[in-house]
Image (spheres, rainbow, N blue to C red):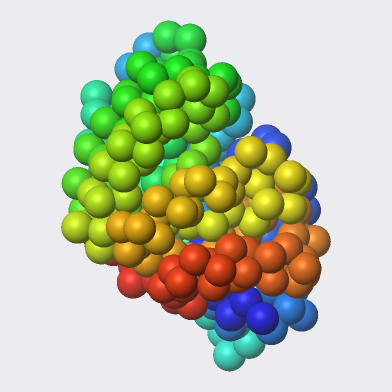
Length: 257
């Protein structure tokens, strides 16, 4: 049984359903003791571009206020934490970090969906990627982790590498895993990808994580309240970790933003 989940979305990202109360109620039904909300941050692009898959800067205070109200209401039934899932773009990250701090967010998880600024035409990590894209992904992620701001790395294997050089993949992902281990950042086994039969979570990636000795954590990545009741997918995620002897954490240490 899952006892803690730090990866939960809300409709403010424009690609999730249900409301915050439904997520909380289902978490309680599932026996979850700690529920962390980590909807996508707004991206503070200098040209004013508004991402269609994230809340706007103007919506962010309402997100935090709503969750604070519910955290008080459900106190004694479940522990609720307020965070964000963020991309790491060096040019705007300091401003984004400042916004999250000002809002009183408790934690960030790193979810690198884009290899380039959306406002300039995003290169999505889920698109077919070769060696250049893989190297850039690892460069960006390791630089982001080195800020010390991220509680864990969400779907670390989200880059869809279609290059034929398996040694290159192994070397680059070993570099990512070693950086995460040195910084004591857990890697997420992503239930959304597992349940939807996506290309992640990847056996070959978590084989590398096992070689390096990374800590892992299971994240529901809930975009629907029903996801929090999915015991079958959770059991499969646990199996991925146990089959490789990975150290599976039930809870994460929230890092100061």
